[in-house]
Amino acid sequence: MKVLQIFIVGYLLVAAVGISAKEHTVDQKDKQFTVKDIVIKVGDIVNFRNDDPFFHNVYSLSPLKIFDLGSYPKGQSKAVTFDKPGEVEVNCAIHPNMKLKIKVEK
Image (cartoon, rainbow, N blue to C red; front, side, top):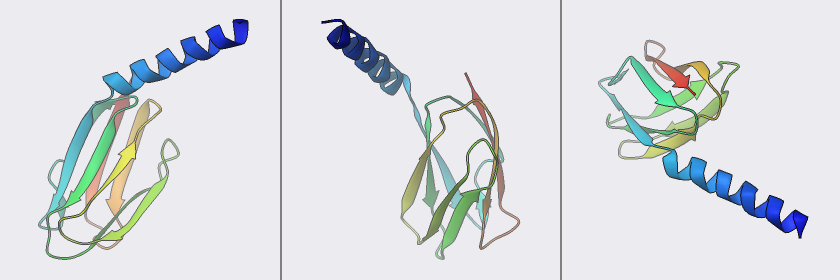
């Protein structure tokens, strides 16, 4: 019975975090991210949407959140969930001048 109670409490906590998570969209247009800085909360999702007529490759080498979304064409969007507080620098492997700072708050 105790194991079941722990499982239920854990499930409710995970569900509560999922409910409070927000989705944000950062567009890629004219070889730039449409914002230079964004502040989000732990658990939030950022969608990186390509609005340019060519490919982008969004990635981060920041120790807080390392990811590489690969190359994708106009009209596609790829998402990343940020699960720890801190700062993340995001770049495009194809267009080195594209930079975005994401501040993840508790």
